[in-house]
Image (tube, rainbow, N blue to C red; front, side, top):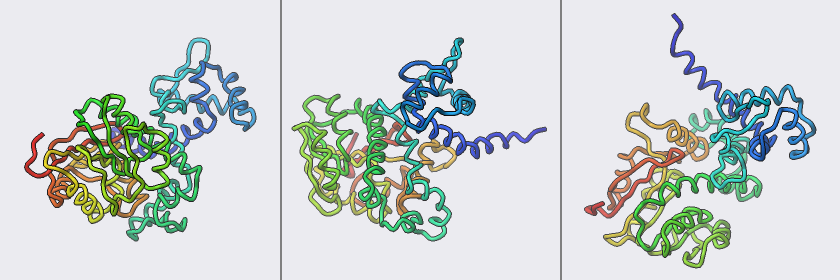
Amino acid sequence: MPDERIPRVQDLLDAFTMHSALRAAARLAVPDLLAARPRTVGELAAAVATATGLGHPDERLLARLLRAMHHLRLVERDEAGRYLLTEEGSLLTTGRPDSLAPQLLMWADDLWRESAHLLHRTIATGEAAALKQLGVDSPYAYLQARPESARLFHQLMSAVTVTVARALAGEEVPGSVTDIGGGTGVLLSTLAGAHPGLRGALLELPEVAARAREALGPEFTVVAGDMFTDPLPPAELYVLSNVLHNYDDERAAGLLARVAAAMAPDDRLWIVDGVLEDDPARSTTASAALDVMMLTLFAGGQERTLGELGALLAGAGLAVLRSRPLPHGRHLVVAGPSGARG
């Protein structure tokens, strides 16, 4: 009798190969070209040559790439032999705000690729091995010195944030919001679209704050500063989205203490991060993968269980009021001063 465990483990091992196929498709502009219109292999090959400048691809090999994408249900083939994108495949096109293409391509970047390759050294030494090899002290220092990598990273984070923000738009939002470490303002602008009259502030490092000023309307004040040292703009709702998971418990606790000190009794804090289950087998793959990604890039970075987040919050005089899952392996955790309700 065949061992039923083998196919599942084999699928895990084969995931890297299929990821490589999708990365090749993105670099050949296959999703964008098929989004424009269905094409035969020959038509697609000619379009690839024009779009990428890489020359006319081998049509037999291109057909095999499409076969792999068909297996993954990202493309379909019609009776005329033309390939077209499925709804899931359209997520890999570059023209949509929630595109997954930047996430796909980011793993080809030097830091992300080396972080994965050197994960064993990171675990063995307790230091982010890829950062050490590349001679930088943080992923953000790496991005600051490499504009093209930074552009791709900001596209990735914007796409993730758009999807997450859309899922948050139905939440009850008070009149003012401060987004701490809020990037280029995607979350605030999305919330503002769903909640007319919303106002507030965004606090970011100077190089990112400049881009946020270009993106946000006059109802939001963009403050260039350091979340660990500079005053937090006052608001009824504070947001830490994709922030706490960058830091070890000591740094995360220090930041939460600063937020708690700024909060009035009725104010609320939204934490948007991956949340792991106490039973690891029950965590979503996206949340578990996000935790490993944080491990590869930040030796102290981590996703946490709700209990672990609760303990950090309690140390700052805050408490978890409720939580719910969001796209991309994230969760919304709503917190308030200890003793608060709802």
